Each structure stands twice: as C-alpha cells, then as structure tokens.
Image 1: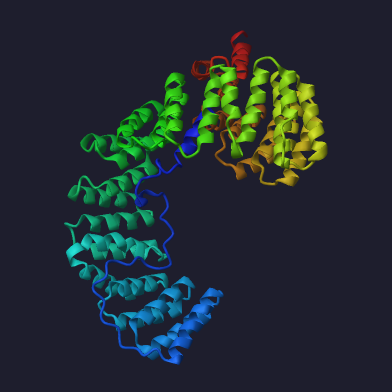
Image 2: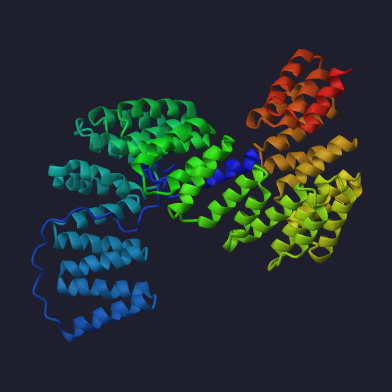
Length: 578
C-alpha cells in the first residue's frame, strides 16, 4: 500500500465522530445559524389571558395549521397574525413569530416578535427572537438595547448570555460591525471569561485573527482550564501556523494532561501534519479515556500501518473489529491491505472476500492485483473479467485495472488495446480517455494521445490534468512550446497549486531555455510535494544551469527518501556518469 493511500485512509478517519468530537466553536467556518434564534432559559411565564375558543378562533387556528401542512406558509402566517390581533395572547404571537421565521418572512416575523415581547415583556425568548430578527434585517442599532436587556436579565449567569450572543449575531452580514457591537457589550464585563470569548469569536468571523487570539487568551487567563476557549485558540493558531498550534497544544496538555478534547484535537492535527509517531502516542493515551470506543484502536492501527509497524497495526485493527467498529467492512479491507503488504496472500484474500457492501467491488480488484503480484497474470485477467459489474463506472474500473496489470508487466501494447476496446463501448468516459491517452504515450502513439486528451477536454472542460498531460507531452516530446504553454496555463488556472502541473510548467520553461524561471517554478512544485520526479527535473535544470553542486544536493535528498525510484535514479545516473 502506498504512503498516499495510507494517508487518505487516515484523512478519512479524521472525519469520524471521534476525531471530530471537538466543541462546535472549533469549526473552521461558523455553522449556519438556525432561522430561529437560540432560546435561553425562561422565567416563569405569566398566566395567559382567558380566551374563549369561539368558532372564529378555532377556524383561524385550523386554517393556519392546515395551510402549514400543505406548504402555504404565507396563508398560515397571515392567519396567525390576524389571531394575534384578535386575542392579544402571547402564545399566539409566539406561534406567529415561529411560523414567519421558518417561512423566512422577515417583515411578518418582526411584526409578530414585537407583539410577542409587548404581550410578554419578561420573556427572554421574546427578547432573543426580536433581537435576532433585527440582526437578520441588518438593524444592529435597534437590536442593541434588546441584547443589553438579555444580558441584564442573565445577571446571575452572564456567561450563559455571552455564549449565546454570537449565535444571535451570526446572521448579520457586516462582521466588522458585529465585532464592534460585541466589544461594546463586553467592555463592562472585564472579569467575565465568556465576554472575552464572545469577542474572540466575533473577531474570528471578522477575519481579525490577532484579536481572536488575544481575546481567547484573555478568557483563558481568567479560566485556564476552559477547553472550549483552548480549542478555539488552537484552531486560530493553526490557521496561521501548524507549528505554532503544535507548540500551544503541547504546552496546554502539559499543564492540563486530563483534557480529553484538546488531546483529541491535537492527535487529529498531528495526523494532518503527517507526524504519525507523535499522533499514535496521543491516541494511545486516549485509549484509557475511551476504553469502549473502537475508533481509538482503529486510529492507532492505521497510524501503525503508515509507520510500517505491521504487527502493531494488525493488533489494533483486530481490536477495533472486535469492539464493534461502525464500518466493519472498511476494517476488513484495511486488514486485507495489511496482509497483502506482508505478502500473506491467502490471508489477504480471506479478508478481501469477507468485505461486503459498497467496498466489495474494490476488494475484488485488489484480489486480481494480488494474483498478478504472485506472477499469475493470466489468472488475474480472468478473475477481473469474471467480476460482476452493474454500472459503467465499474466497467471502466475493471478495464483500467486490467490495463494497469499489463502495464506493470511491461506489456504496453496489450495495455493500450484493453483500453482501446473499452472505449468502443464507453467512448466518452473521462477516466478511460485519460488512461487511454497515457497508455498511447507509453507506446509512442503521440497522435492518439493528443486525440484522446482533446476529446477528454471536450467532454470535461475542467479536467486540469488533461490540459497538464497534453501540455507536458508537447513540451517533452515535441517543439510545439507555445501550444504547450497555452494548455499548461489553463491547467494552472484550474488548479493553481497543483505540484505536478507546476512541474510541467517548470519543465516547459527548461525546454524553452528559461533556466531561472524553470528553477523557481520547480522549487515551488517541490516545496508543495516532495516527489522524486519533480526532484529529478529540478536537479536536471540546476545541472544545465551550471549549478551542479546544488543539483547533487537535490538528488541526494530525494534518493534518501526514494532509493529505488526509476525516473530519479535514471536521471542521476545519466548526469553523474557524464
């Protein structure tokens, strides 16, 4: 299993409920606010007015509710607004407000909320709702006195009020104005951690990261063990620098080692940063806190696979399976990959055959690949051809898999013919067109490659790597440099930070003798991804530019990580033997 595949598995794990268990404030984007403002604790509600259930009142209620059931929100809201005026009952006003908010009828919601508060002046819910409607309509100045009353009403628990403040203000489009308002409201409560935290969240929404860090630090100075604020600060730091975030997590966990949510978040960050050894240690510590959660041994097992510590990986993945992990088929698939990596072919086959559901098809493709690895290519091809397929995508995948096996066996013409045949049945399939073009290039059919890629661009105009492949081939195999440049520029428009497209552009610049720009572009590509082929290209350009010592350094560094890479070793041998 490749490092890239292992990292994809870990990235998928990072999206599980365990690793996403941090508090809501740690989300990179603020969650979309509920159309109904959050209702705080209510005081005891007053006795409603004595209301006779007349025929007219009953008719209006039934009319409104039936209209709602039929999807006619406007009729329902009008009926309740009329009832509200007739009855002067705060319950009817509240219902009218809720219906208007759900139907996104802002003017009607404002009218109903104002009446609700007038009829139930001590209601925190009415205050919050009216403030929320005013914020939604962009009327912050009018909302402010209501927000102040909400905070005043929560005098015994001001923190609760400030924690809900950002939710109430989230719908206002002017985040800077919102920040200014929150700062004004918080200014009178310098000793309240939640007030500083409200400022921090508003600052984050307004793009003021430095202020968000300072305000969250102020909150933590008043309540050092507050995980919510600590998680938030870590998130903001991570958006600036992963290394700084790691330092903060480390310092915080040293002081508060029992902070489970921070440790979870820290472990997740370490996985994202590919610091797999430290990540595994953090998950091991979490195992004691989550003894019955199968996601913990699953995480440790996958990290152990990444570190190529296969005995440990097998142990932990087995524990996850025994503990009733949610996606058992995924774990069986991982165990199959693990056994395959260790060349335990029969064991791997048993695991793959045990996979069911949506991953069963992929497991069958792996079995075919194993047969080829064992030197039984005819049996592998026969196995592939017998796989039951139900969609065109699966048909294309089977053809691509068979072609890949033939390519690995150096049977390049046969690999090309398999894809050629598949395209007769699926002539516009994007993946097949791309693979067909790559197979054509391997047998020097540049005309066919160009034709397939141009057709792919017609079928899928946003396919960045189609433009990239065409541009690179024209740069590498022809002298049609200006045409190649047009394709590569379009590829970079679609994927400006893609290291392989940057590599292609750098190679074109080299072919056009623009060594300085080529070196800059290739260094940029290598900084994004330490790929051996990019390193081979950069070294070659440096050598051609007379910077032979620097070229040797680039090659040596890449060879250390990829000692057997064919393209890299070939390039190094070609120049070092000159």
